[in-house]
Image 1 (cartoon, rainbow, N blue to C red):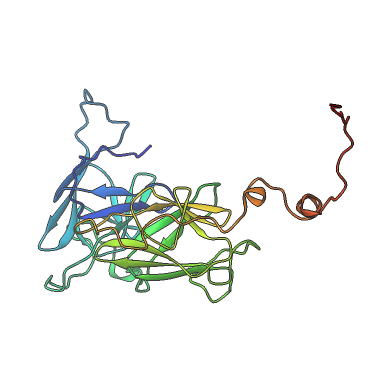
Image 2 (image 1 turned 180 degrees about the horizontal axis):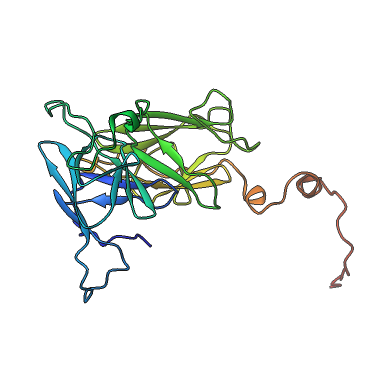
Length: 275
C-alpha cells in the first residue's frame, strides 16, 4: 500500500517510482498534496508536502513534513528527472520528461539550514536515462528498468535484458517505445512470445499486460503518452508452434512411443452370417 494519498486523474505528468521496488505512483495533476497514511482525516497535525509542476519542471515544498532531495534535507527545491525524494522512511525516484524549452536548473534544496562551510557536501550523481517503464517478474524477482527506447530480450549475454533460461532464444524478442507506447516484436523465437496468454509476432503493449518470454512471465508497468496506436496487421494472435501433445507435456520418449506404427490389429470376436 502506498504511504501517501494521491489524487487520481487520466493525464499523467510523471511518476514516483519506489526505490525499494513496487508499483509506480502516477502524478496526474500539476499540484499533488502528499500526506502519510498515519495522518487520519481527523488528525490535528497539518504536516504535508506539495509537488508542483510549472514550466515543465517539478518542485517540492513542505509544511511540517520532513523531506530530503538526494539525501539532503530541504523545505523547498526543484526536482530533476531521477532525483530521489525521501518522505519519512520512504524513498522514491521521480520520473518525468523535461521539455527542451525548460530552463536548466539544479536540484539543490533552498530555504533549508546549511551546515558550516567545512561540513557542506553536495552529492554528485552520475547522469541516468529516464525510466520509460518496468518489467515486474510475475513469479517474484528483481524488477527490470526499461531505460532505452529499444530493448532486446534474450538468452545471449549481449542482450539488453538477459533471461538465462534454456527455453528462451538467444535473441527472443524486441521492445520498441514508439509514440509514447511500447510495442513487442518477436524475433523468430523458437518457443514464441506471448501477451496475456496469446502468441503474437508483433503487439502493442499497454499497462498491466503480461508479457510471456517462453515460460517466463513479466507484468509491464508504464505511463502511456499520446493517442492509443491503431492495431497493426501483425497485431493479431498466431498459432503456437507446439503440437497439442507438446503443450500437454507429452514429449520425448512418451511422444515417440505414441508415434510408433502398430500394424497388428487387436484380436476381437468375429461373427459369420450364413445365408
